[in-house]
Image (cartoon, rainbow, N blue to C red; front, side):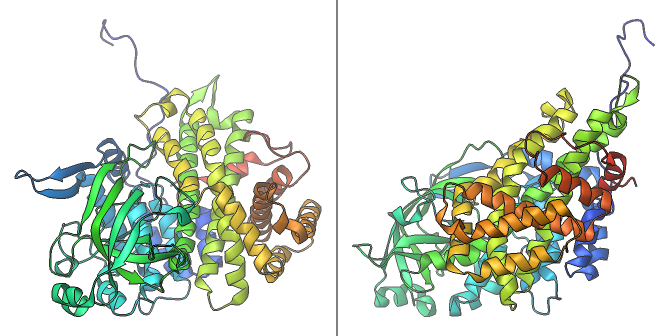
Length: 561
């Protein structure tokens, strides 16, 4: 050692990298098989190896360090409103689009279980980077609505379903693939989209024919603004606007492209990009419509039901995204604990640390199990019971899994101590990502009220939930008492807004417990039930009761290569 060296670098865990993200996750593998997509395992194994490489994981860091920038004008002073991204962003987008994360379930000949397969794929992508998932999610979710949009859908869907990522700023007809965004919220209304003031006025048919030819039908001009306009670089957005002066017709949905059929830029003005807490790789913006042209999708005044056709799928992705970030935070924390020693033992061998890590592992496995079970509801849209179950579990799951995320991220960060709190590692970025899934596509309160509406409008929804919970059988007394009390309380649930958050939590925890009792090893299921369904619940992670086999839970949580 040189006389001027102060120390050697010792007892620092290696980064979590060069690992197969699918192969090291038994819970994800098992959920994929039981929920209907065992055929996808080989492809996900290959994808897991690719995503777990050091250079792939580093793309997430690069994309967030090098945030997108708005170029409002070109060098000659012409308005262009271009978004400039780092090459890492384009690399991430290419990975997802080529894998079909935006399109696979909608492709002709898609195999049974395609939504579950995509869900597992999305959980893997979410462990690498989350901002790039936003435009992919919106593109994926736009397909059901556009399939009902007649000639408009027929023109755009082949490019939407393309597996070629094409970031060029060109009219859609000149591109190999396109992306779709959404624009709903305005500054005066936020979640209350009925307060939107953006107005749409129909083009005169003669003018539209002269300008757009065969694409003249249902063309409107939009004047107004959007306070959050996601992924403004997208080739088109679905937008809500009022369609009559008195507002009696309500909101209508419009398809607003960046470029018009004649090749000119649409009159969409990007005012600025949002400076966000997290999700920094992704561009979110404020825009004004200065007579922008949009095409009506669905019936006038029926914009909210049309957009809600997308909303179910975007909310599914919020659940998947939260499960993915939990899994990423867990793997980094557990890998660190296995590689770092304190007080003469590895951190992962310390009893209290085992309690914390095992508790996080239980939460992560339960989130994965729930997310893929929910995806099966979307696969089985021809089964009324599965549709009803999805109608319940989507808002409840988006509320509870997304709400658990920040506390989970903070605990995982604490496992790594100061190394977790600094930007050199991924935990700080993951922690900042957690809240967006709870806010985007309906905040926690909105989700809980949506759950109440589902139970209130359709009494059969309670029966669908009861049937799902009954599958776990009568083997566990804690589970039996918990689910019986939940089902008894549901009879008056539609009237109890005050307690709606607690209800949503109970629904999700009950379904998670049932899934684990049916499918997970006993040491996982019993620990989850005893720590979540027994009388003494709540508080921070790391409160598992005595007798839990933490070693077995942690061995399952991250399988060594």
